[in-house]
Image (cartoon, one colour):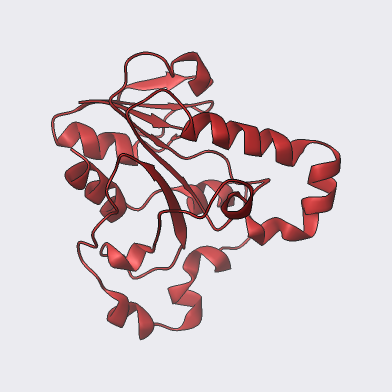
Length: 191
């Protein structure tokens, strides 16, 4: 299967598909953090290259409800509309199977509600990071290793580690990376 992982610098999802024998490539305007097939540039330049499936992680900076305090400013200067338009280009791409992921965001009302909301603890990581999946011709992910009971016993700052990360230059990268358990579920269940 020919797999495009759009807006992924980490290589996590790409590598999970490669491990399963697929022809997968990541694409981002940033270089990849992990050696492997990677297109450095705008994903729109390679959208029409005959992909069987695309997993897209469009930037959430101007869409996520966690930034609602800045929505008026982002609407006024056009940043939010640019984010909406890019999201819609991903979900409407001419690719047979598509997953677009984002945190809880305005796309639930601008476009439609997600098909599924997942958490890392459903896939073996005692962490929380509510992630919405908008799916086209793909089944919902089935949890592979639910550790919610373990996660619930952790103190709040451990359960919600990503929210408690101190300010840093790479905080956004740490918060945006896909968990390995989720990537493995995608590669295994969406063959």
